[in-house]
Image (cartoon, rainbow, N blue to C red; front, side):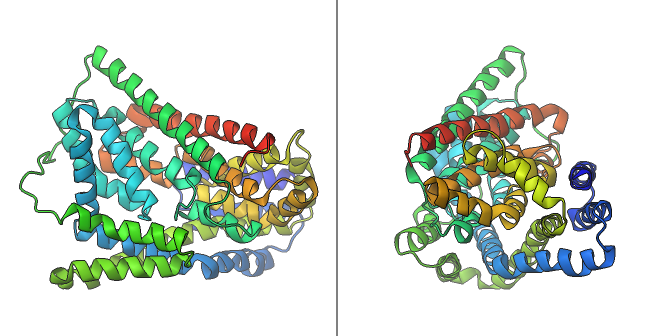
Length: 427
């Protein structure tokens, strides 16, 4: 058991210090194997790699098509067109709301969280300039709209965090819609209220907009595609995936083809964009798969049975147990999808059997684990946190506190609300 705890600690520390999880995860896995008397070479070449390859085999098409979708939306200007239109409708006086809503629409439409950060930044910097807001809260606004309620709570989300539980609990992406909608509402409302509070606090302190060096805040001369046409690919993903119940791969292929058809005059950009999206997907899936490989080693060692017994023995509802497990693993890996994949690879069958024994709907388990994955995942070493800070030109010292409250504390409150609802049989 000490080896498992130490391995998790090492993985978290190395990730926090900026080590790539591609080699930090094998190091942590070998610590687990060493303390459990498992032969190291076999633990790496067989157990670890089987876990890693298994995740790639299951999810690579979705990762690749999703990354290509996001890149095509970005290079054609369609993602920016949707964001600009929404921002114009909401108004510069509600700049924070415009950013949150724009991010939410893009992520719920299937665009990768990382791509949304790049797509939304030019609009965000323009709105902050016009509203004279401190850029310190920009990362938190983007995080709230991208990394919280549309990622884990809203039923039907095509994000990976909502898809991973499906095969483990035999559920659909729309599982437990009432719990999901309530949790999403809690996240959106509380998070937005906090951002308004911080906006007021910063203004009282005299902190206003300071234009970052080398940034152009005007979008007036930029020609963007028609907003209504631009929203169609997003709608295609949502409708084909949730209403017609096509596989997510089919939904993404249809959306990609629609982008190509609408923007046929820009065909010279297509190959470069598709290549870039495909390359980006390799980084994303390998980072997650590395974490899953670590989980496979943990699951294979003798001490795992003790760990499983400890976690499943947490007093109260098994929903509390699974929430704690997913949160701890998401924190350790700095990844919502990584922590969720590890937890369900290791304990998914056990929690499925618990659902059968206790009478708790598997839909409830699906929604709770998805929401839980978006809790402690956004610790300082999280890749999305680092990306949004780099893109916005802010530092952990300047902006991380706001991210922590809006995208960690608020989702944890929503998780508690979801568990309470589930305890009354509402889902």
